[in-house]
Length: 55
Image 1 (cartoon, helix red, strand yellow):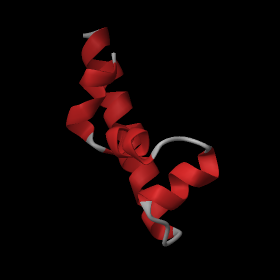
Image 2 (cartoon, helix red, strand yellow):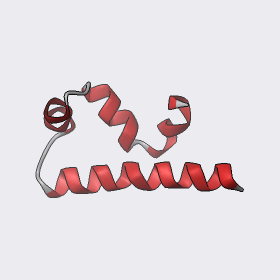
Image 3 (cartoon, helix red, strand yellow):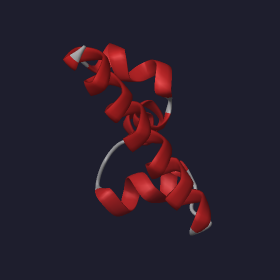
């Protein structure tokens, strides 16, 4: 039960990142550069199915 809530929270966070990034008119590459992350990592954060591969 707790693990499923954890996974759902990760999915919600990723979707919020994508939502607010798009609201600001930013690309994943621009967000990655602003956060000093790779664009691939930002892509993984925003993709709900990829969260489980990060663990």
